[in-house]
Amino acid sequence: IDKKELTIPLLNIKAPVQEAMNAVKKELAIPIPTIIGQKAWREERVSNIYAAIKALVAAVNAERDKQNEDVRKSVNKTYTYYMQNLNKQIEENRSLRAENDALKTENNKVKQRISQLDEKAVERVTTQLVCAKEELASAKKYNTTLMEMYNDLKARWNAIWQEPEMAEAWHRVEARKEEDAKEKARQETEAKRESMARQNRYIGVLDKFIHEGLEALSSFAKTDRVNFNEKESASIYYGIMASAVKHNIGWDSKASIESAAKRFLSDMPWHGITDFKQECVTNWTKLFATNEVQFTDNAIDNFLAFIDYMSCSADTYVSLGGSNGCADQLTNWDGTQKVGLGNSVKRKEPRGFSL
Image (cartoon, rainbow, N blue to C red; front, side):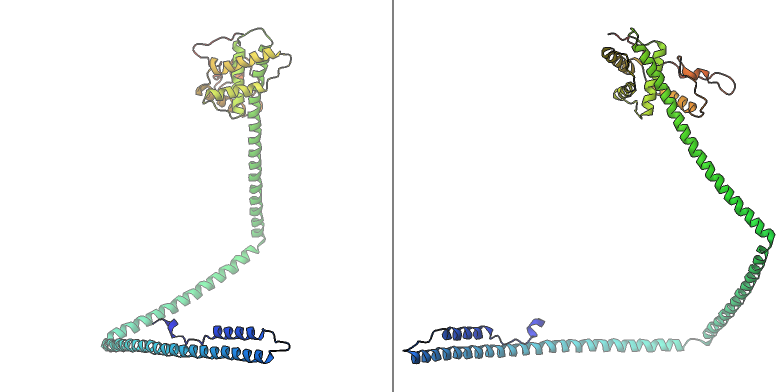
């Protein structure tokens, strides 16, 4: 049974009442004759209103009879519903009583087994409890002793620190810590400054290579020659390489080498050089970089190592002139001469330039 069916139905007379009211309003809305026919109008209105009220009474009686029938059905369903629940509760109560009886039986059995425990077991448990209490008392006593020793040591420690010698020693330790912290900060600052100075020297060495390469290219542009000589080739070769390193340009493709050469030429001063000669020198330099020389891994590694060595000291750099530049002036610790950068790495079949 659905619980919604257990609700008492209401008397629904709203519709017939509204209908009767509308009929009465309609009758009353008919105008009264002014001279003749007023009696007939009253009789007709009374008859029609009486008929509307009579219809309303009939509708109300019908709705009341329907409500009574619905109430009767609802009461029957309510009775059935609660009787079903009551029977269900009775069955559950019987089940619970049976379980309760079973538990009582089991409880009696447990009580009987407990009562059958021997007295020695109870004595052992009692002895263990006494031992535990004695151990707890001993632990408390030991803890009290430790606290007394701690307080005594604390008092002695405070007395020691009241001595002028200990206070002075403590101040010396703190001063030493402060000095160490300042020294560490100074060393870090010095290391950063040295790193920045070395980076600046590194860039300065690269700029020197680029500058001497551009000077060699400018000197060549003012001649009538169409080929670089050995000194110009070395200066321009390492100038292009330095420009690539400075601007983080790789060497993994011909396009990268052309980009390095283009970047190198972007710093070229073309004062006093015609546009035609400028275009020729630009094309010759690009051909020189891409076709006439090779930027091998060994040459690049030697160049980077050389730049790194030169940037270690501000007084190291002298000049890049000649085929080996200032690398010819470097010596090992035993006085033997270091291996310089050498000439530009030529291809097996070098080609000359022509107009």
